[in-house]
Image (cartoon, rainbow, N blue to C red; front, side):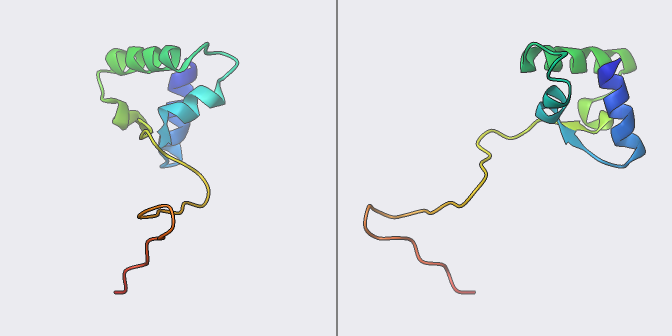
Length: 83
């Protein structure tokens, strides 16, 4: 019911959320992300809809937060391309 309630709120507010956000929203109720994914799968099967129809998307791997500096080598930083 928690997943259905969360999805209902997303749809009412025309929002989307990652499955990871759902896990952290109910972190005291789910033991792991795998449990969250299983609950989402149960709801999608029950309603016979794809996950994205519930406003839930998978979070891409490799997201980061903060400044990022790319370099060609140890001493030569990349320059910005001029457009």
